[in-house]
Amino acid sequence: MHLPSWIKERHFVSPNHDPLYRLLHDAQLHTVCEEARCPNIVECYRNKTATFLILGDTCTRGCRFCAVKTGIPKPVDPNEPERIACLVEEMGLDYVVITSVTRDDLQDGGAHHFVDVVHRLRERLPNIKLELLIPDFKFNTSAIEQIIALNVEVLNHNIETVKRLTPIVRPQASYKRSLDVLSFIKRIKPDQVTKSGIMVGLGETDAEVYSAMRDLRDVGVDIITIGQYLRPTRWHLPVARYVHPDTFKKYEEWGKQLGFKATVAGTFVRSSYKAKESYQKCLTGGS
Image (cartoon, rainbow, N blue to C red; front, side, top):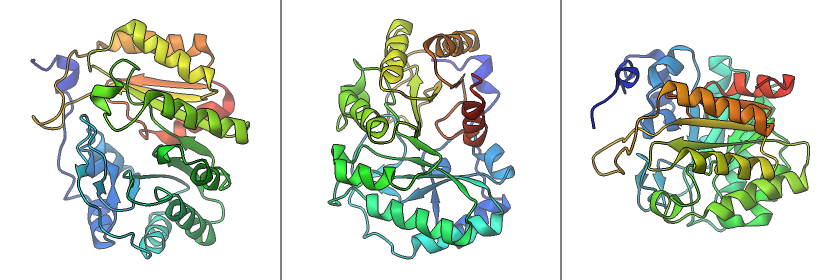
């Protein structure tokens, strides 16, 4: 399938000449920007923003859209929280997004390591604002409760795709389980800002997109992101359609109608892209 003009304007470019790239590698830290081959990486690195990927660079699941490698992960690095806190302080950031690979090999899915990272960041930077993009933890409620208790600004868990395509796109995940995670967060802490995202272009219909958006609102999600799926390698799922920019505008209108506090939709939108701005939109109630 040929790339349309609005896709050709941007593609993955190596950021290895950027100063932030060198800082991250010197600190032996991973970002989802690199590991998932995000098309926004150069823009974000130039703006001194990055989404830190904790618990290693190897995932125990093999989602068919994701460029992060799958395999047997290394042991959890107890020094990672300190290295992240030091780098965030050096970068002078006031809003940080932390995500992780899925670690089904760990009893708590890595929840305690999230806690360590957040505590270390707050020790160094008491005014830091934090967004956590979490895995489903196999719906281990005690693990999720540890995350909720951190009282971060935003808790994000992505459903990634529509219900019908979930077994194909995320064979080791569950559409219902992801919704259950988001619902559980709101049930335990109703004022917690929650966020989720989906990709389009995997074979879904617009009616299915609307249904997924409605499902997310039904469990109280405040912020939604919708972006174009771009095949990272030939081993991943092919793109079924390139969604026109006008359709993304329609999705944003749907978001307003459904009552999301912030709807961010566009070709190159990713879950953590301009996360601070999305949170600020949510606070002002503007979609």
